[in-house]
Image (tube, rainbow, N blue to C red):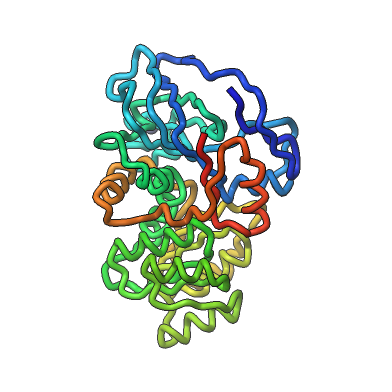
Amino acid sequence: MRGTVLYGPRDVRFEERPDPKIVEPTDAILRIAATCVCGSDLWPYRGIAPITEPQTMGHEYVGIVEEVGSAVRQIKPGQFVVGSFFTSDNTCPHCQFGYHTSCVQREFISSAQAPLLRVPLADGTLAPTPAMPADDLIPSLLAASDVLGTGWFAADAANVKPGATVAVVGDGAVGLLGVLSAKQMGAGRIIAMSRHQTRQQLAWEFGATDIVTERGEEGVARIKELTNGIGADSVLECVGTRESLWQAIRAARPGGHVGFVGVFHEVQLPMEEYFYSHVHLHGGPAPVRRYLPELIDLIWNRKINPGQVFDLTLPLDQVAEGYRAMDERRAIKALLRP
Ligand SMILES: [Zn+2]
């Protein structure tokens, strides 16, 4: 088969790779139905997270089970499945507490931008759909694999409750789906921070009630103004920079909650200011597997349509163009089909 390999900054190649094989008896091999480029893939792509040797890419995937190892019990060949970017056994104490991305057996999936994928711990990592999905559901099911699951965790970690006032920092796919998640969780007011018209449009569609175009201190002031000087009950931090984190913490009311899911690189938390903020912080790599059955159900019954974040669809062999389009912000998110 051919698969995606990143050689260095802005050097993505789609090249001959060995077909994945069953290695452990708990593995499954998937035939990928759709995969995509993640905002976090842009870190190594831009050279911000340096890479020392060529690396395979891709951690968002849906597909049909082609083959399973001898110890796989629940997942069957022929099933359509959604998986998460970390494998999980779904049985260890951390999984039982719902923190599948801290599973004692976790491994990162990193070669999903290919037609075939080996998934370790298949029974614990993969969630099947009720039947073979209609083609138009595939983008939404793919979104559940990472960006929707991550936006959902951001909202959950930010303690979004019915009637809550929510602010969302970040208008990438995760931030936009954080808006959708907050709406599903019953938020009364959802303030999306975005200065891009196409992204604002999607935020409105997903349930935003207000849009703030200002950033940094001005953005915080605008949120305070919209909330009678109080601040938001829940803030979703979906970027992962020092500025976005502080924007989130300062936009929250004292005692409010910030859910952070942007991947930080060398960001320090000044404890003195944080000490006086009274803000709860919770986040990290989203335990997407915890939410998959519920998210699949919402998508299957057409209650949500998170697949709208994909505004570019390309054949998998044009994966390099997918990276370019996202890097240049010509696309919110690129879907790739083998
Ligand atoms: Zn586990």
